[in-house]
Image (cartoon, rainbow, N blue to C red; front, side):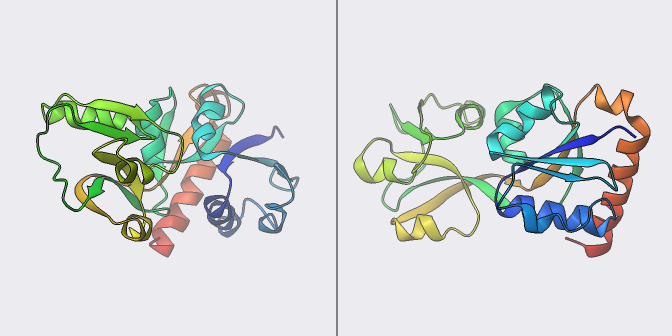
Length: 212
């Protein structure tokens, strides 16, 4: 039987994903291998899990290096990769927000600068509001931008809001809610249809049963 390859984002989301696959009966004792290996193979189920950076999961799936993947909705909206979004896995819940210092309101400001790791989402958000802003792409520590005057506000993903609070920032606007999604390569859903549909069906039963 041919392997099904599944790209998982490294870290806590990989552990939760593997637990769901184990509950669905598709893998066994794989969680313990997360910290040691980048490829975890379950010979019984003929599944191969590859652990990659969260932003890289849709790339592996789009190009067929993985048949399935688990990716945050925020990353899917930002990258707009050519793959199918199949299932809301209902974990990894967070929200995309506009945040900044308390005395800076997110209303219309001329020449407003927006720092973010999600330039497409930020651009789309302000385009819908009819505002022209300067988008500044950062790769990390976005919270620092308004503190040092690089930008007036940031657009970023927030889970608990603790990091914002610790840096003296507040949420000015919520853009959308995000959670982990199961995605599939467009060719794989045709060539490996039976096995992929079986995985999707059984994973959905676990999600619905556990009400994650």
